[in-house]
Length: 191
Image 1 (spheres, rainbow, N blue to C red):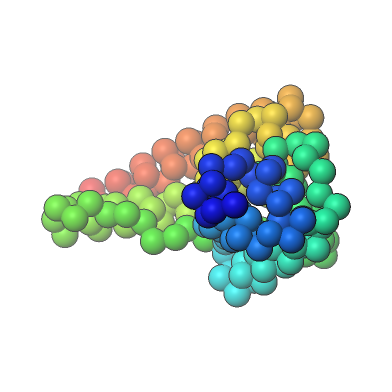
Image 2: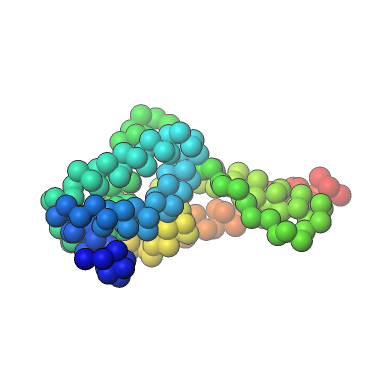
């Protein structure tokens, strides 16, 4: 089978082929999901070294499970369920999950004032994300960063769809309130 044909396969088929010993299938799966999975960990723990360790551990678990893999759920849901469980294992001891925001995109034609304002808004968003309780933060990041819908997020985190929708609703509301309040404070300080 050529690489071109492999590229046309969905994730389930690639994982099954990898389980049968086709290394190229794993390479494609890795390419498809590496950025999203790493960002998921980085946003959950904000420590690049820890994010990298957890990220590598999950891929190691995917490799170890290859021969027993059975497509009972979407591959990406299965993958993020492993990632979620790995995070839960890591944070079993009392610790606060914080968020790291990657380099923010700043429009290239911005003037210094606009650039400073965009950086301030990004910093404000980071602050507000850090204020979310970890279940809300995780649901929000899976939806916004990974693109999962509420049922997929629910499956990953092991909660009901209704509980997941509530987490998302509260996360959005808390972020809106926090950003609005903080931006008003910043605006008053400037005046």
